[in-house]
Image (cartoon, rainbow, N blue to C red; front, side):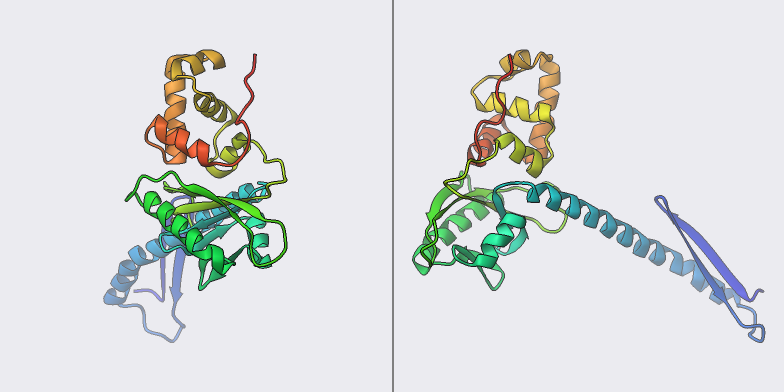
Length: 263
């Protein structure tokens, strides 16, 4: 018997150790106490796994927020109940001003009562599609708000998250834009939202322009097999399953041409 019990275990790249030491006057640890220490190890390992996973999710969240904040378009994501689960910096500004969009008990809605019914109808429709219960394409509307400030345009689009966001499950995205401002390219939006590479954005852009996959591959000077592999990655990142779904997504994302054709 000993006055110290030491156990160590590994979780991925992390190593944890637990040391229980009795005083010199204490009796040595008994066999059932040593067994108790062994029984605690699986529970401690699970605690360490959860801690490590939470740290990873926090890092992903910070990276995704930085990407969204780089957009010149406001973005607000809502879950299946219409609750706000994410805003970028521009979206935060619109909500804080409270002139066009506001939060009612955590749910996104129009600030103007006259525009609220239509806005919430469009949000519900997008959420149903995002949950897979409908096949809507999203919609756009203009919000004039409660004040004499300039109107803003919004695009409400369904969103099927495939593990992209770690802090919740968005079902619809609201893009907020100033009609007088020149929007950035859809390619920049795609890169920020879905982490598409420049080549993947170019392929998506060529398909959006009406080219078939073979013609797009020739335009990019890549093989048909490489184009198919790249398209699968685009599908996985955007939550699309067919080329038609991808085109619908591109139609709903604000911005000008995704990528100019290169000669």
